[in-house]
Each structure stands twice: as structure tokens, then as C-alpha cells.
Image 1 (cartoon, rainbow, N blue to C red):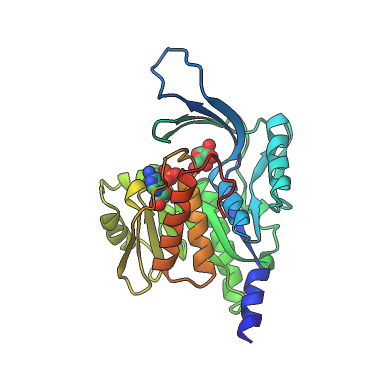
Image 2 (cartoon, rainbow, N blue to C red):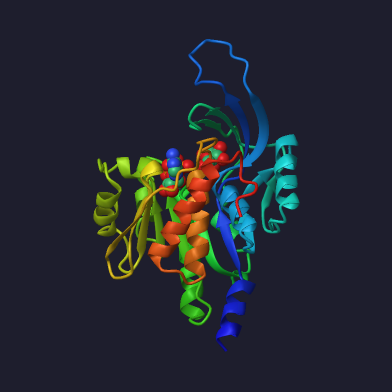
Length: 305
Ligand code: ADP
Ligand code: FRU
């Protein structure tokens, strides 16, 4: 019986809703000065965007997952579609916009310390609407993760899932959100999910300087019973457990910091996998820090598992 339950759990997918974009990643010898001309060590095109990165990591960990978002059909969009297909990530419900350009980031990686500097731009690709979200079959998922953006529509999407949960008490879908940017409207998502990832820049909105304080204080604004998780770069991560107790994990730095782009997305994906598989909050946060630390020692996301 227990085996059957585990099997049913694994049969359903994790859905990640948010951005996919083109990352043009350049590895610099050192961080450049303004208005200078530097020959770099290497560059590459890579799929990026938090929700897409979450899927890339989940898939590497052997988790069945799907990406949902909008995509362009220009050259960059086709590249991103091929990346999804090559990594066997389901994109069956994505919405395509012709005559738009794919969003892109120029990313400088400083090879001296692995730091990543991101310049992001979206010329004209629209965000996913709740009407489009409602077309998916919620029966296929037991966890839906939202990147914190497009707040008004995401609130409606979460309400749609809550309505489903009320009518399907044995088929509950867990909801998580990631609040990353220092943007005031994101505060509205603090009390909308079972699991809330609060990141450093978002926490700055509240003039908070420590992850423990962030978890303790922002928990007051979250929904009762929800779990707040706060990654904090090389200090590791902190969370509140189901009984309100603070749990901490140290960071697990690699031998050499090579590429920290997407460390946060790796952390979030690993935590979601752990929690969905029944790990305690402390175990999941520790797993997140271990995988995110390993990622910082690697270029891109390959060979994580
Ligand atoms: P991002 O800036 O990509 O959102 P964070 O800085 O929030 O990522 O870090 C996410 C997680 O990645 C941290 O909780 C930590 O486990 C790991 N991490 C990030 N930077 C380092 C580092 N320099 N050394 C070790 N682990 C790191
Ligand atoms: C990393 C990332 C990049 C992307 C940027 C968008 O977390 O998703 O892949 O360029 O953030 O904000």
C-alpha cells in the first residue's frame, strides 16, 4: 500500500511556471571596468530563467517535471525550445507568440570568484495569463511552483489551484512561490503558498540583514502553517519548520567557485524535490545547499546529479 502511494506521488509531475530566456554567458578573466575592451576566456548560449532552470535541475535529479510559460518563435525561441526537447522537459502547455523576441540576459561570470552579473531585457514577450493557465489539466500535477513575477495573474492562478484542492481533497496540489526581486508587489504573494522561498534581494525590502531574522519576521506575514525558506549565498540557508522552529544549513562551497549563475534556482529545485519526497524541512534545506554548492563549482547545470 505504502509503495502504491509513493508510486502515485512519482507519477504526477512538478510544474514550474515562470520565465525561460536566453542567457549569453561570458567568462571574463576579471570583472571589467566601464568602457574597456577585454578578451574573454569563453562564452556560450545557455537556457536561463528561474522556472526553466528549476526544471533543468529537477530533470537532472530524475524528477518528472513540466515548464509552463510564454515563448517566442524567433531564432532565440527556437534555441530555447530545442534545449527543453534535448533535456526531455515537458513543454506541451507553453503559449507561443509569433513576431516577438525571446527575452535575454547578458551574464558576466568573473572567473576569479565565480560571481555572476546579470543584465536582463525583455523587448516584447507577454507574460502568461491566468486564462492560459486554466487550460492545463491539474490532475497531472502534485506540486506547482511559481516564480514571483506577473503578480496579479499568479494570484489568480493560485486561487484556481485552491479551488481545485477544495474539490479534490485526496489529490492535493502543493504550491510554492519564489520571491527573489526587491519589488514591492511581490509582498502580495507572501501569504499565498504552502512553501515560500524568500531571497536576499526581496528581504532587503524589509530592511532585514540576516536570514534568521527574515524567516522569523516574514513568517508573521505568511499564511498559518506555511513554510518559509531563505537561501543566503555563502552563509547557507534558514527555514522555519512545521512547528515554527528555525532550522539552518551551512553552505557547502566547492573547491573552486566557477559559476554561481542559477545557484538559487538549483537550491529551490532541490528543496522542492526533497520536500515532495517527504523529507523534513531541515533535510530538504540541507539537500538544497549541497546541490547549490556543487553547482557553484561547475559550469552550467550539467553533471549535477
Ligand atoms: P542566487 O543569487 O542565485 O539567487 P543565493 O545567493 O541565494 O543564489 O544562493 C543560493 C544557495 O546557493 C545558497 O543557499 C547556498 O547554498 C548556495 N551558494 C550560493 N553561493 C555560494 C557560495 N559562494 N558558496 C557555497 N554555496 C553557495
Ligand atoms: C538565474 C536567472 C538567469 C536569468 C535571470 C533572469 O537565476 O534565471 O538564468 O538570466 O536569472 O532574471
